[in-house]
Image (cartoon, rainbow, N blue to C red):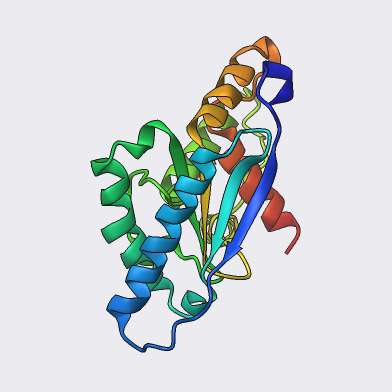
Amino acid sequence: LASVGVPVGGVRIQVTEPTTSSSSATKAARIVDAFWTEVVTLMQSSQDEWATSLVVFPEYDDEFESFVEVCDGIIEPTVVATQATEVIGRAWFHPYYDADLVGHTNVIAGHAVPHKMVEGFMNSLNLESGSGKGETIEFEELAASNNLVRHTPHATINILRRSQLKAAAEYEKGLGAKRPKPNSIYVRNAIRLSNHK
């Protein structure tokens, strides 16, 4: 990013302490509070101080579906309602991330690209190569690897600065013929993870 005039800052990591309450509402309120507190901290800091934030929620490590419910059902609607999409991007990560449990067929903010879309990208890139011999993997392997892209040791939300996401896109545009093919990153990541299992 420095090559396009964006200061390169650090990664801020905030780990939430477990609550003593067994109430799912209390846990949900804590994750939402920690998310928005971190958004404010990130936006009040300079880009060269903090480029991105990782907010870690260990008490959700064994609760993928509950974590996704809070992220998709509470956090994402508040991001949209407050128009925070103009200043942040976000991505959900989890030790048991499973796109099949999310059940999406289109891109959803915060989530991995659906497996069928990545398969379509892989097939399209294979056809574009002209030889029909581009690197491919079976769907089951692709799905497993595509999930691995979102696996982390703990339930985590990555908060990214929108300005840096835009700068990265501008950088890619400036690469000309060296610019990666659209959506090839998803295919490359799945194939690389598949090869390293």
